[in-house]
Length: 327
Ligand SMILES: NC(=O)c1ccc[n+]([C@@H]2O[C@H](COP(=O)([O-])OP(=O)(O)OC[C@H]3O[C@@H](n4cnc5c(N)ncnc54)[C@H](O)[C@@H]3O)[C@@H](O)[C@H]2O)c1
Ligand SMILES: O=C(O)[C@H](O)CO
Image 1 (spheres, rainbow, N blue to C red):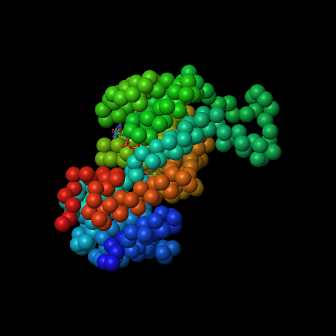
Image 2: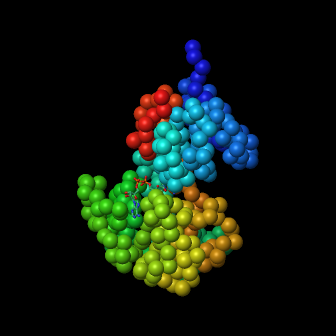
Image 3: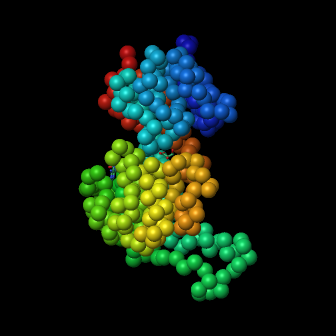
């Protein structure tokens, strides 16, 4: 039997998925508690056929330029704003991500944020844990309905569609903004609006777009001024889509009512950040896809991307399908 292809894993990854991958390749994993130094990673890649990217890792042409045998890079996420895909394409390296398998799970988290923030679950639970059970009806923090209110989704891709289905089941009117209006059955009773219209009409605005040059700081001071003053702002896309200082100002000035975030800028988010001092934010630490089953499926898809790549076969989920595979 010939030598197995070598795949570098630059940090901690699910052991069950690595065990599956190890049936096909030889794994060289960075197991130190500290982040793998970039120069060491470049050194290891000189001998490698594949890279399983553990985030945060900036992936670009420089990282792979001295890796003559590298045939694939893959990571267990759908977002790939850490990757200069065109530079991998130029180097003849396909890049694999994990679309689809996480749609329902991330939509469940987005909807959990929408519902929990609307009913002020966090603040109301604090009454209970503090032994301050409130006198009804005025003592508690009064919430807002979801039914008969309007949700505006920015970024109507795989996850946006799954969020819109949940919102309709809760009796919400659903609007969306996307690069292009969509025309498919998934968007039943969901209406395309320009960004300005969506912001003016929505009671809940949910960002589910990728981070790109175009979306960086899309949610700025002007954006929040265009929202309704009693609206909820939700971000499950990427933290850097939001100008966080502008969000703090908008909450403090009453331009919007509340924010619920799965993603922040920066990550990790500092415990003494002014956003947490507004008392108007529900924040969780980027857990959108974190259920055991979904993370397993994402990691198995990552392994399958790598197995295909090292064998110079088309990846099951390839971002740069146009790549000319290395000979
Ligand atoms: N919080 C989490 O754990 C988590 C989990 C999964 C995905 N994400 C983020 O969500 C993003 C979307 O995931 P997806 O699987 O739905 O991707 P997708 O590619 O299926 O959908 C993204 C949609 O956003 C639209 N879009 C792009 N630029 C836009 C813009 N400027 N304005 C409006 N719409 C725009 C695209 O046209 C596309 O329809 C990912 O790129 C990732 O950054 C976060
Ligand atoms: O993009 C994704 O898939 C999530 O943010 C997890 O990294």
